Structure formats: C-alpha cells, structure tokens
Length: 492
Ligand code: FRU
Image 1 (cartoon, rainbow, N blue to C red):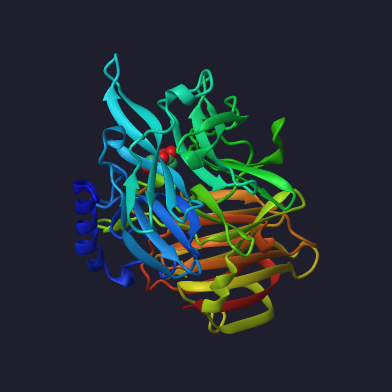
Image 2 (cartoon, rainbow, N blue to C red):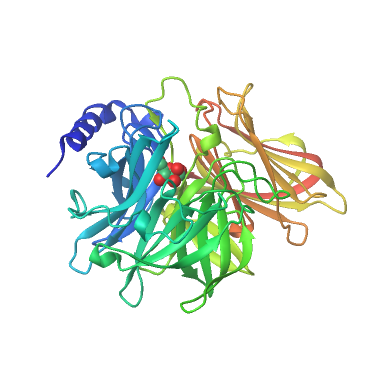
C-alpha cells in the first residue's frame, strides 16, 4: 500500500517535474525529478535492467526529510524516471529514509535495505539520531516496508559502536548465495569503521566483523561503504567526513577513500593501499554495481557537502550524479573510465594532430558544452614549456581551466569563473604521472559539469559548473611550446 506521505511525493513530482525543461538539465547525467538529490542508492540490476535510487527531497532544492527517488536504465546513458520509491512514513524512519542498497531476491522480488532515522532530543537537549537498518520489498516500482522493521539496531552493533551514526548499508548476493551488507559506523574513538553483516535474505543480519577502521587517521565517521573484489584485489570504498589533507592526496572535509587489499573469510580484510577515488571538487558517496557482462560500474553524487550551498538562484533541481564509470585495478591503482556505452552517442570525430601550441589558440570545430574530447599533451623539445592550459566553457567573462605543470607533475582544476554564485572552494590540484613526458586528458562536458580522466583513467576529477551555455569556446594555451593531438566528439 502506498502511504499518504509517499503518494504526496509522487503527486508532487508528477505535477511539477515536467515543468523543468530538458534544456535546463544536463543531457545524460542523472538529476532529480524535482528538488534536491544526494547520494546514489540501490545501484543494482533487477530483471535485466539497472536501477538507481537516490536520496531525494522533492519539495525544495535543499536537503530535507529523505525520500528515495528512482530511475532505471538499459545503457547507463539514457534514464527512465520512475515514481519515488520510499518516503519517511513510519516511526522508525520518520526523520528520513537514508542511504542504502538494493538486490534481487531468489524469488524474483527486489529488496531495498536502507537506514531508518528517528530524530529526538537527548538528555542534554541536543538533537540526536537513532539510526537502524530497514527493509522494503517490491517489484521494481512499488515497495512494501517489512513488518518486522528495523532489522538491525543498536543491539547488533559491536562493542563501542554508536547507534547515532550507523548507516548506509550496501547489500549484495555473494557467489555462495549468501546476502551480505557493509554498513558505516562511528566507533568509541569518535572515528569511523565499516561493519560486515550476513543473512540479509532472511530479513535479519548477523554481525560478521569490522572490516576496517579509521582510527582518526582518515577522517571521522565513515559513510556510504562498498566492498567488492576487482582484478585480484579486494576494494573497500567509503566516504569519510571531516578529513584533513595528506599532501595532495586528500582534501579537507568530505572525501572518498579506496582502500585496496585482500580479504580472507577467516582473517578479514587486510589493507595494502589507500587512495582518493576522485581528485576533483564534486564527488561523494559512490556506489558500484556488477553488470551482467562482468563490469564493475561506479556512480557517485557529483557534489560535495561543503559546497552544496552554492547553487544557482531559483534552480528547481539540485544535485547530479557522475557519469557511470568502469573500474579496474592496474599496477596497484584504481582506474576509472567513462562507461563504454557513451561512445554510441558520439557524433562525427573532429581530429587535429601534432598541433604546435605557443600562446593561446583555438581549433576549427572544437567548441561546445556536451562533448567527449581527448587531448594528448607532448613537449615540443627539452624543457619546452612551463605550463599548459585547456580552457573550456569560455567566453569573455567565463573560463573553466585545466592546467598542467610538467615540473610539478600536477594537474589543477579551476572553476573560479564558472558561474558559481558563492565564494567557495573552486580549485584543486593533484599529482599525475606523465608517460615519456606526455599526458593524456579525456574531458567529458555535459552542460553543467566537467569530468577529467587522466592517462586512460589513472586519475579522475569531477566538478560541477553553472556557466551560461552560450560560453562554449575551447582554447589551448602554453607558456612555451607544446605539441597536442585532439580528438573531439559532440555527444547525443
Ligand atoms: C552521505 C549521507 C549519508 C546519509 C545520507 C543522508 O552523503 O550523509 O551518510 O545516509 O547522506 O541524506
């Protein structure tokens, strides 16, 4: 039965969602039907189609009592909007249906596992959450909350675990048929941990072990975990709150971590390496799915909590997802590339080879705001240049810059003049690894964002922009002399 709260949200989005013209949205990046969107939830295959849910407050462009919005896709590029799936309509989730996962059950039904939040004033008068894990069962469109909810509560936590911060279950069916979930938790030292549970198929959970802990080294509360094997390694993803930078590897505030290692069911997870997942300005709470053809595909909220207040005036939707990305592990590093289906939406190629750049120049046929462009940057001789800049979304007033400095091996994203109406963090630099002196950048633009993939996905950096669409110039600039190859495709 659809509750009154859910029906109200469905009526609201059906009435007002269509008022937002397609021209005011990105072309192939997911946005909410209307209102506010944050984390991706329940990114999973169900009856052969890929479903994506999201943290959703349809009634305003601000975060509010969380619902789950819903879409599905056949190719990760074109999305079909579906009615909202969950609303905060029970005692145990009255303050919000927080992030979670989805999985297809043996009997063909779809299970959603999410965090139910109840907010109350504690003994000191502070607002405090009680977070529990809850189940809803459905058919890919409508969902019934389980009568025995919540299925995991404070009683299921390991010693020292906080029930105030116990959230974001990611559920999957393992090769042995058991259904597992990883869940974020705050520990007694006030930092984060990821907990593993099993037995979700029986609408309950048995605590297996703590997979890894921050010990206050990599931020505090660890949100939105994911846990999966890839190319001979075991990967644990999490999005920590309150991180402090370590060199150029992490930035302050809400970050993302890829913990790479191995997993032994007897001994647990052994961490070998830690890296940020994305090095740009807007990326949080990624979730992955294993596609039927064996690819591990990731999607994330292309935003950051610290900058989410900077939105265009009167915008009727807020929040975008990244382009879904194929993941792989090579040379002990996480690689990400845009999902290959994107290539089907390319128009004719515009190609320029061995162009000498000295000063600033543009190239015939290279402009636009919805495109897929690869630029190879090579020195034109020994010590031939001090920096190279790729300018996009440019006109007399606006300019979004990707700058490479070979002496530092750093790439910098700069969106200081990209239509953002607030003085927020607008630049970020990170280390890259040129190969034989050359660097390869693949840049995806989709009206309100840029995503940069370095050296076939060795690093990725995402940022939203709000530059007016008429600003569509692209230029190439060097302090010194650089040889470039450019291959550009308009998309869709
Ligand atoms: C991460 C997060 C999650 C939570 C959700 C609430 O962005 O804080 O931990 O479930 O957002 O909307």
